[in-house]
Length: 294
Image 1 (cartoon, rainbow, N blue to C red):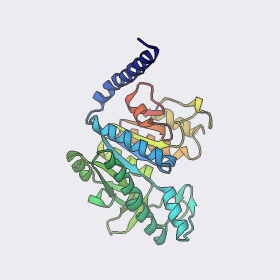
Image 2: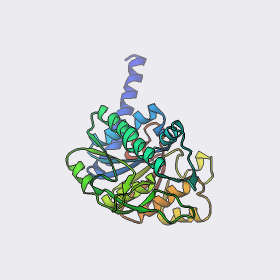
Image 3: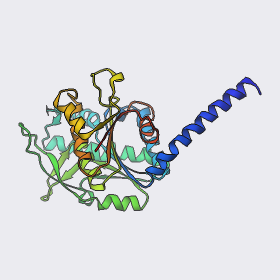
């Protein structure tokens, strides 16, 4: 046998071993719901966006039930700049007047949401784009738990997951934009991380996965080698208290703790910029991010 043939066989054996390694995880999560909060730089880069949609399509084809809850901050900023509307933030939350909300809803529910649906359907997966308004998925109320008046920023008061279960039963992947309304019909912008937690809890999801711009929770900021692979909710809370988790990671870790103390079995924080990070985290023993469990 020639050297080239031997090398080719070795490559094929490695691929086969990878598939076999994934088998127990495919069996374990078959027909289980996994909520994917999609945001960060992975939404901006076209190649990464396509790769993530391919990962989600594969999860769907092996019998897992994925749900996407997405943000869209960069696209919103781009449109606001184009029409000359200035953005103001308070502790990471966009202060939202009527004009800002109009553009936010247009971008999230229209441009971003339907682009993700398009990409999924190009992978042969039937997807449906919705917002929190559809089927009364989210009922919101005005957010008042901050020092500043955030305007038309809401918090989720109630979740009705019947529409999501109906989509699952008919073979669709739901793609959810975090726009909602209250009982009087007033529209609100909802934080996408909080919307993902609400969806995961209402569905009693097996996993909630946050796609971020970092490789997980780090003991030392900026040092990817200090990634913490596994934590309990209590241990994650301690890292929040002692300052190990700081800055932009704080709200995500708080959301993760809230989710696992609710109805979600586990939360993963992974780097959406790493190639096929979704598959590596779900279908391999080692994983590539931080797992937070009860």
